[in-house]
Image (cartoon, rainbow, N blue to C red; front, side):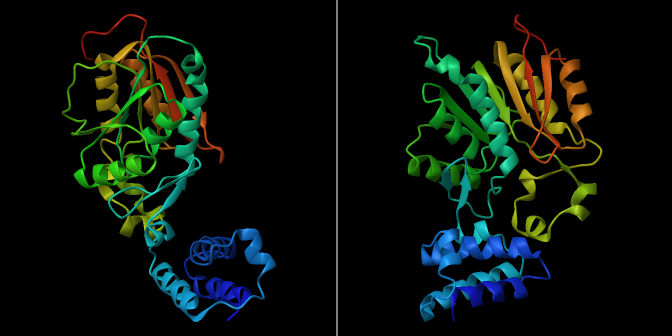
Length: 295
């Protein structure tokens, strides 16, 4: 079988689950992994014969795709902000909108890291998952001390593997942010917490519902901002004066998230859209004076 023929086979077999462009992209990812060929070379070499062993590998991947398993879980890796992360069903697959959030933080803070200063800059990520947020922040803001927190020991284990693989020093904390307390102060707190309401499940792709950890995805309809409120309360006492709080948010709850942050005394609140025009990120700043009590 030739490369082009197998690509067409992927497209036909995946039609019930994916449109043509998605199927082509999935074949390209699978073939790049198995054949070690870039997308451009796959097109150029579409008349090239595939070995029997590699045909079997690519058909095995296709079988998993047909039952809705994400390609990242099949290959056990995901690309994020120029790095490759190990992923499995214990952690969320990193998304492009999270890359945008990370890029926002890096863009906002790169200049202060280039200044020769003895000030220790500290970052806390809440909701470790694969470790993509804290690891990339440490990579690009190398002088920062980065910590990350997650309630799941399995997620932390994956994130530790990624940190080791990418040679990044991260402090890992196993805790539930709904009850976690600390005396440590941070310059930046960032989180992509669970924010998908139960009522939104019907609109989601089955490969997310079946294969990704619900603990990291869903909240109850009656209290969709439960984690945002808890993190905001934590940030009120644990952000340094003029510290920054960054959230990835539910696109339908931008107004509610902003109102919640304002009610807790945060200032300079900014809502930002992602590349698809959806309200997906919020940045806020703690007051210049420390807040000693929770609201």
